[in-house]
Length: 80
Image (tube, rainbow, N blue to C red):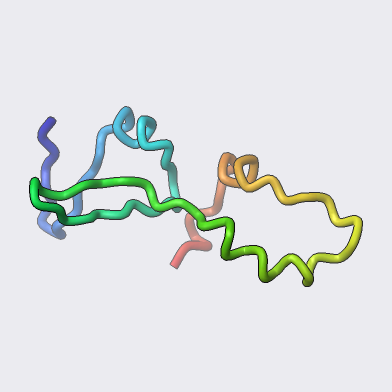
C-alpha cells in the first residue's frame, strides 16, 4: 500500500487501515522504530494508571463507559 505525503509532511491513511486499527477521530497512533522499519499501532489507555482516581468518584456514581464515549460524535472546534 502506498500513501502520499503532503507538502506539510502529513499522511492520510485509508479508512480501512484505520478501521483495522480500531482508531477514529481524536485517537492517537504510536510509531515505533525497529530493526525492520517502523511499526504503527494504536495508543491505548493504560487503565491501571486510572486506579488512583477511584477515591475521587462519589459512591453510587454509574460506571463510565469509555467505549460508548469514544463512539460519540465530537465538535472539532474543541480540539487544540
